[in-house]
Length: 348
Image (cartoon, rainbow, N blue to C red; front, top):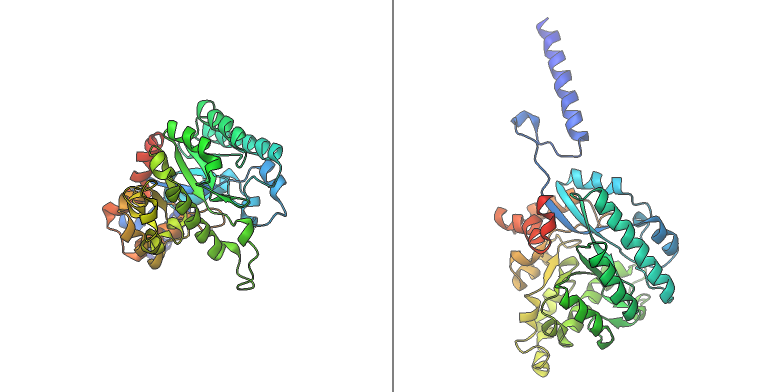
């Protein structure tokens, strides 16, 4: 009887552990007798792919298959497994601009209305960075107004470049003026500019491996050296992937700052320290070490690049295994920096 009771107990315990494993990863080891951990992370770099966008981008360069099969349920499942309370969703590559202004404007509106509806349905789990129909400046100004005033977006999502123009181009100054007026949070995702998508420096190496980080550095350089960073101080910039190659190259690029005193009175490094940087695709020793030399933990944010970039669970684990952040610093990175910028997410 004792053996039977022991077998019954073990079977029940194992079944309970199985349920815990299936319960979105929220439960910690039952053997420790601890309570479920409430998800608290904020994923600032999380992608969505509404059907209208997928239909338009299928077959285009830079599209990753994982983005064509996205669903809200997949996002929530990943968030639950990784202890993520809320994700701020945005459109990723290949973006919205394919040479037709009317198509881009229609697509941006459709994506934003879809995102707003998802946030309305799941207000504690999602926020969104509104997609913009750049390089059409007039359409972008209208979409900024609609995104903020009607859809109540958390902020705006931009790409590092459009065709062969980068952020910092004077053509986009009216957009920067409006974003500055609205104290906008702007999340910038990298892409590969027309000039550099098909460079044959290493066959089989796609743009995402190196070009995205390089284009991020170009865009940051454009924002700073054009004077937009100092001209529009109310814009809160978040740069993807730990700022690309900028943290590593900052000292070298800063060497040109002496010729741009009007645009950057205090030099490049001073401007870079004002920005925020997410860790999507950058939770590795080299990227984090360079970033920590540039900014303090209060400027570093948790991001996953889900669905193609990895799971929230894997990113959270990688950050801890680096042993480069204290627990208090991790709290800033994983949650508090995001809720400071986006107060609506405090209740998530």
